[in-house]
Length: 266
Image (cartoon, rainbow, N blue to C red; front, side, top):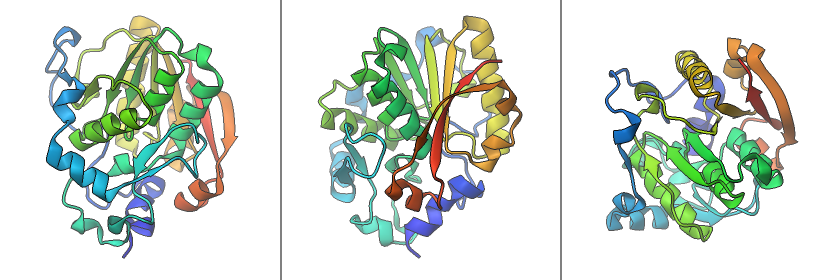
């Protein structure tokens, strides 16, 4: 079975084939660090030569088929060998970072079109994946960025994607941020993270705590998945902007046609 209809489908159906939560989900350990000693790493930590060579050989640099042709990314595409292999042939953790998901596309487009939203601000990109939203924030003038994804290989991909876009890579955190004490950020952004009820509940509580403690603005990108549309957080959201998705993104996401940026107002 090609990966195209298989592993992508989990995000729409909330049935993860591998039985784990990707991105910033799922681990239930107690808080480990205060933010003053947070385990984020500089980009040099992710520049393992062997892994870098593997990713460069098995992804394609592309800027087409998304809402943000200004941003180049290394992604898995139909021209990549592993696109057509069985999922268990991929030798590393599930490569959710290798897709430019539609919620992240909407957030990135919004920042590029409205740079005042992030200019001079500190931004946390939660569940960063390929890093596109953090990259868009950097391009738009954010003063401080932290990209968070629990997959260390995503950290390598984010670093490579920064370099593709002539940006100095920003810090990357590969711990589950939901388990850590909250720091003060001007803006927290997350795209495509509401695909599982238990994760959605944890995110909702964490975001409420963040807002109440620091009055942090929270922007959420989502293409209207049922797990998001039916969650109680929807009653605390204000629609900012809705984008029509490019045809390629529609085909890759089982026909989803739009993606929306929401402002969280608990």
